[in-house]
Image (tube, rainbow, N blue to C red; front, top):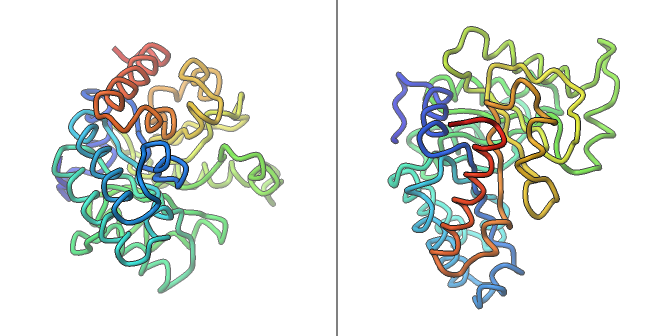
Length: 282
């Protein structure tokens, strides 16, 4: 499932979810998880953990989502592990969503875009998470880079952390919430795209009721399932008519079933089956 600039990310994601199941599994090598797996909180432990997850899941889940921070904390050697994980996961057919949550302006945002969305970069991924709270227009370099390379961008909109509400639920000059302003921008970016736009929104599965118009014609990354308390059965209530475009994200709920590959696979399959049942995906 290599990137083909003539086939946008949204189309590739739709196919991956339809064939492999609508599930994203995070690769989050927390120090506590490394310990639980009997590994050291060091490069050797990071390498073993990451390789195990990729080898166990990259040939069967739709999306793998490495959290960049857990690799960055080890410096250049950690980034080297991340580079290999991205390449290996994509080679095995998984779409890689880099969870980096980058957000800046001008040439700095362009540099972030080049890092994750330029095919010449060693960290080239199928999509990246970005923060729009310097203004949606600040994301233009990433949006343009994604369109050029057939990749995707997931924009933070209504996140699963409780603290997010003070910004995301704030009233914008339009009279609606700031999150809704971002969702409206995303919808405009995706206008006319089929079968799915390539600009997604991050909307927490823990919200109960999103209280927003989620008809953005793009994917909705839904963190919060598993350790944060949400379940696949909660998805229809949060996402309503947009539930078929949801990409539920599970991290610890799967990763805690390691270090054996069989445990990881069984957990991912169970979550995938539960999501299919909840959203009515065949």
